[in-house]
Length: 354
Image (tube, rainbow, N blue to C red; front, side):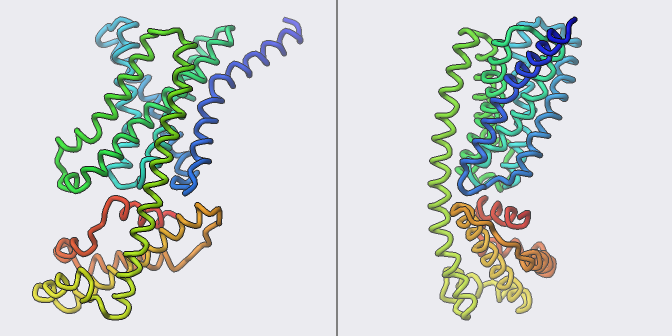
């Protein structure tokens, strides 16, 4: 083969591979960039991508095992079995993050979901490129703008739907009801599976399917981002004021005038004075950290870099110490005072990992 032919072949390889990977990576970068509150750290996005790459290898191993064990026809497997296996495994990280209160708003879940799908798509497209290489550049354009973006999009849908339902049934989820947990996370999974399965049926030409996906997915993300930013601003406005008001009452010794005053008095009949004082200190620390976390979000939206604050780490250490001194029984009794929502827990996690 001449040097010119070799160079042309190498260039064709690079262009084809780039066409299969560039769109989904670009889409993810855009999602992270347009999040004005920067709710998801760049390092977390990279970890989610890495998780997606691992899941891709796990899916390959599971799929090969199922094909060998049950002798499933290739077309049936591609249309019905593979989408189910892939969406269940891709959803694991998003479900874990939502369940553990590690996402505060739908946009967080959308970004994490798309990052997992991006990692998965990168491995899948490289695998197909290596073992099923074809000279037709349109194939890799469709895989890049269609299949790869689909993988990110459907996992985002799982995250968005799960987060929305989790917020709606937050109080009931704390009771660890397995049936309710299934009802929260199952709808998103079923939607993702249906889209993935329909996509693999090729009811329309690959080009038309890709065009449709590129129209509908950005529209969905636009709606989610707009709704999420509005929810973030509303939550910041309401909680910032109430947290400051309650903190001022504690600092000025007027906590009995707050809505928790009566409950604090009832605790004094059940616990020692030292424990009640520790509860009050713990509430003060929660409020200080909560206000600081909201301040960080507002600074991010305004484009300012948040300064390092070593005292925050000390406050978290003090919180852990107070949790030990108060004990499990005291923490259960004080739970109505803290009345922490999923977003309150999320903001403390965000601040602790800042």
